[in-house]
Image 1 (cartoon, each protein chain N blue to C red):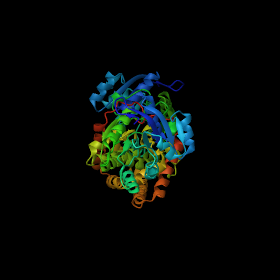
Image 2: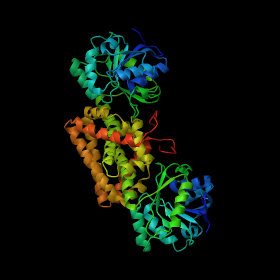
Image 3: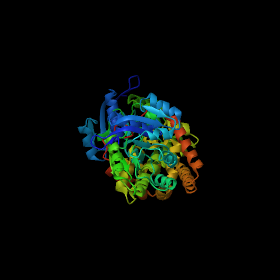
Image 4: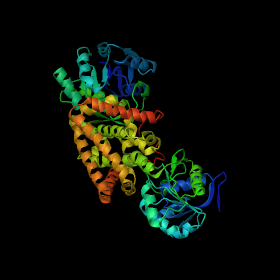
Length: 302
Length: 302
């Protein structure tokens, strides 16, 4: 057993499966914290692998998933959520008995369901997790070691979980600078639908609506800082987010329907010049946001 | 005539009517550029006036609008758009013959229409304008002298306009650090509906929808940087934005209906697990935004 449970956290060999922004930043964070002996990486994309090696994010790179997984003490699945069950099926027969496997998927219900369906049961040493951090950039070339500093990582233990495995994953994220918290699968998917999945869907929808207008060139030219902030997440990876939206569709649809009703109310109020209704909605929104964010004054929005 | 047209721009007495973020930042910018002799301010709110004096944003403060306006070489209307016609009716009989009047309103059609209706015609020395800059904060205490640096100010000349007056207002905004550009009233309102008014309306709607969910405390707690950026503009002044939305309702409704159709398409695609449609919308949006913003890599979204 090459994982030391005593403080400080240290893992001898960390394998990142899918070396992009999220997996790359975790590798960098653990390296900066002297919490990892060796980072090895597998990716279906050989260019990403080469970049990871060049950038020093991975010490060794592998084009054979099983070969890499067999060497690791902790294996982090940072692939698209749609292939995680397949990855689990490939690696489970070859991993070390004491190895711990975790993932970083943005939806949890579908990942857990798919793996259970594929393997017959959830392995005790597989600990679902989700670091609530990211940028609109993707790829290992945009990874950086402070991405998780002060950010929450949700740990989603399941009924079969080995207690030690859960502790190891929690300590790994703490070593990466994150604040960890446990949460149930369903609750996770509801909260993330509201705070992340729906905002992405709406930002993509807004920009696509504007991009279809006749004077779209002007529109972007005259957009101010507010628009830039509001639409930043629409620069995120479309395929990644299409999959997230589909994998968490029940929770997303619930919020989306409520949102569409709100827009119907606002449209009617505009049609009828009903200032009170508009002001009521805007005021409640401002109140809610002000209550939850006490942000330092930001002088510019760009 | 105390306005020098030769470079550099200089105005002896500038009167700000409504001394908040926008008017206050203009006063500060012109002071920093040594482009103003004296800033005088009127505001219906005496507390705002006192703050402006204390902060050195205004050199003299007045609780009588006509008295202040009579002293000024340039008068900037930075009040809510709904009272601008009323302000014009008060000041026009008392202003110096050579004085130039301008406004900073976020909608132009309704402002021009209201003033024309109120005064019978648009005064030749009234030059509608709109600086495309702001933050979600309001009040003179949040004003700062670089708000307009590198930001566009749209000048919206009308058929009665005196050419010299238009030049003076253009030069004033250049002195404040802004890039000026002329635009027609209708075009202005369409472009601003798309880039500013609709995004504000949608951000308010999103946050109000989430604030009505059962687990709203959790929701804001687990929100990441993307959510913070996406919802930042929902911290803006609700009354100001309710008025803007009403004053520009025709242009806003046009875009809102297109947006609602887009959401219907996405909802249907989610219902039917139609990944292609979702991916198409998300990809077009990312493409449009990437094309118009070549932003420097931003390491964190907070």
